[in-house]
Length: 231
Ligand code: DC
Image 1 (spheres, rainbow, N blue to C red):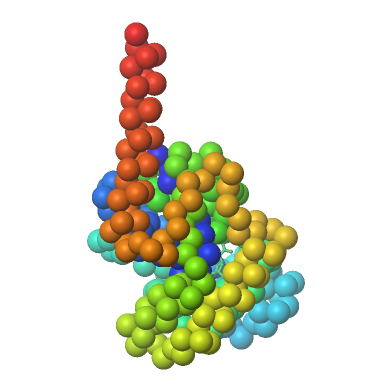
Image 2: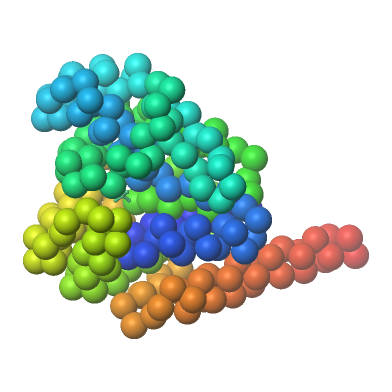
């Protein structure tokens, strides 16, 4: 199966997707990390993120390589492990800008589709259920209120040793959501057939429990379908 998890920043998509993939023995892919990898390389190359033509041309040449290390997926760019730098605020800021460019999205679309081509994957992002895998077997839209998401991201950054100011982090999340949902190509929006989970009052275990229940329901329906066919 292909399981798509979309939603705004800091709604808990990564933790939920990672855990769900582990439970199912599936591959986990954080598609945002691919946008971040491009942003990281552009920063290294000192390419102006506001220049769409320069970014689109440069991004076609960027080689991204995913390497599985136990449960972790490392993102290597031109032979360098970029994973430790991908959460830096500057990378976050630039990834939000460059993800609005069609040329960048097109390049990453084919990478994402080839990763999911065999199934057995939980992929999370903004457009997985709408654009990358519109035929995904189960689609979730994970949401939470802005103050809760701001607090979660603030705590996550502090835990990683990246200095964060709660108000500023919350404001940045809000700005990024607006950019993600207003862009013309593949905007953040709920797929019509997505199951909405509001994680505001829930902890991670409760979110995962809901997801597992939905996936099991889907598996049961499928099994019943194939039994019917055999009869
Ligand atoms: O999920 P994230 O915060 O790591 O994503 C980084 C940026 O990439 C974010 O600004 C939105 C963008 N993104 C996207 O446009 N489409 C995706 N499928 C995933 C991320």
